[in-house]
Image (cartoon, rainbow, N blue to C red):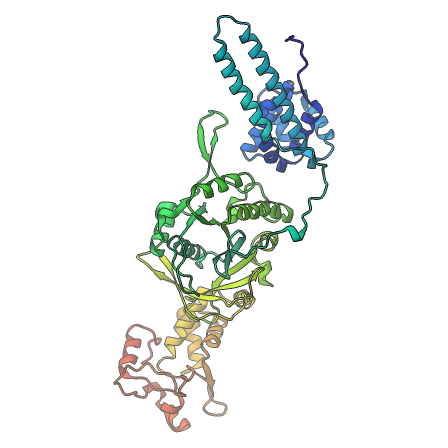
Length: 560
């Protein structure tokens, strides 16, 4: 075979591929999934350029004319590729970035043909060499040809007309029932969302879901067991040794069924040595699918928080968010796993569906969304709510309530059996209203309850004591008063106002007496007897033991 045999190449397609990657870095991963590497380019300058683009992309440096030009100059390669003018020409020669993959397929096919010519040339040279064993030559040649055949099979057929519609007749679609991980709550084969402010128990809830999945125990609002399965967890903020592991142990999970996805293997650009790089959704969804395949009977993938795994995706860019979530949805559909994304709430107000941090595309793409928050009606601040924001594939369900219990220094979830009928909007609206932080409000509620436990107090005295003795603002105190249902009374016209705790369900004013101790009238209330007829009837009684205890530990503001 002559040395002058023309080499198959498509310089226009090569230029279009490189120009597309320079103009829009989002196509780089798609292009490199088609190509085997920079060596698929025929023109030496194009090989250098592709190497530079891949290097910048791997370092999370945005690829554009400026960064690429600087990268090549730093390495003394800018003249080798034709200078900045050639980079500009590449960008201007792109017919459409949308055709980048199509042009990459052309480049790969030409590379396969060059490989075939090289293999044939080598085979011809070896055959005429009498010193070589012919069967061995043919076996080696056959293996090389088989590799080329496999490479050809890996290239997507580009014969279909570009931009032609892909249609399916609905009558040909086989009907299927929705598969559920948590029936009516978390579907399999779909993407779901759990959102809430930091520190309220979102990760503890996903730990509980992990425990129930890996053990097959029933769900909080349902009875019965199911076949246990595996869980893949991507949690970039928590350490497996001191946080994730203890949390799952406390929840009773079978951790032999849990896979922690820590990152992906890459090569250091300078040393060429293997290293672990962070996994991002814009580049490594294939790695997630591989982890699912390596986890026996995998049912769930948990990404917590999703905002830390977006890579170069702008979380506020609707089209970028929808693009990456579409790929996640496809992964869920192919594998049948439930993908649960965890995120925070933004600082805004309004409908719950608009409260997720970042683009509304997150909530729009998810089939089920749940909000975690404090129960605004719980004065202790300990009760948490798990409420539906949307569920596209099930009827609207009631929410659930839970508390975080201490399990040896680690939080675990204790679900309540009764459903919650509050909406996510109502829960978030209570948290959004102007007022103090929840911790301040909870402290004020506890202080006011204890202060009034001995019976009515002068309102002005309570407010003065709260403000000057306990650093509780009057606004916070009034909100605590409303939360507790504290009653105001003015025993005599034009006289001072008093505050007292509300009556209990049996109509009696609440007391703090222990069983067997008769109530006694507090000394500081005796002067009200002539106004109310019976101090016990109108302002409440307190047993001496309880009163002494409250004075001793300072819960009655020092007043006996």
